Length: 164
Length: 116
Image 1: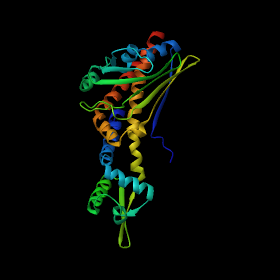
Image 2: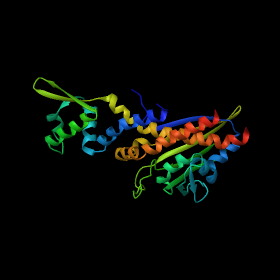
Image 3: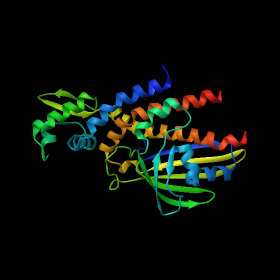
Image 4: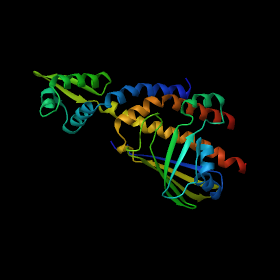
């Protein structure tokens, strides 16, 4: 049975010009506004940036459920910034437990790749390196994030309802 | 039931698997059953750092979450992995993948709003 447990690949077609998508991803403040995090500086290759989780502004109910994580630090180690095609960083997936030092643990690599296509931009997001994440961490992340995951699902439903 | 409820139920069902695997000795037993195939407690205990009783206890914990099962063959009880259950560990990635889906939905709203 072939099953890749090391990586996640997501591909989306965005109906927006290439430069618009590039700035939404490579500009720290724009990235923060859709991702739900506020960074203390710009994304520069081979430097670290600290962010704080901020609740979504889309839904008051979901925002309340995210309050538990509000202010949680999120450190990103920017890897490559190659306009207008590639942006990548390393981080600790699910590093949301307070009082835990994640700095010694392995990171995953997140890569955003943009491709201009007719009618918009094709975006591929790849997160890899999960095989090196300790299994205990996976178990804990899993348990502590069930709540947040349900909230994310509600957020999607809300968006879809708004778009309908 | 809404998709959110169904997903939450699936995740709740897999949580004990992660709890069971969050132990070094049990992980080691799983690795041996995986690599060497079905075997007896005596063989698992051979060369192990923990007692036979401890291995028995851990095997029962794995059995409790559906990761292992035993059957009597002659005078011996043979333990084996239930691989279907083990593949549900993939849920960890599914969960992160879902978070990416949600984040990319927000990105879509963010970049497409100016171009309607």
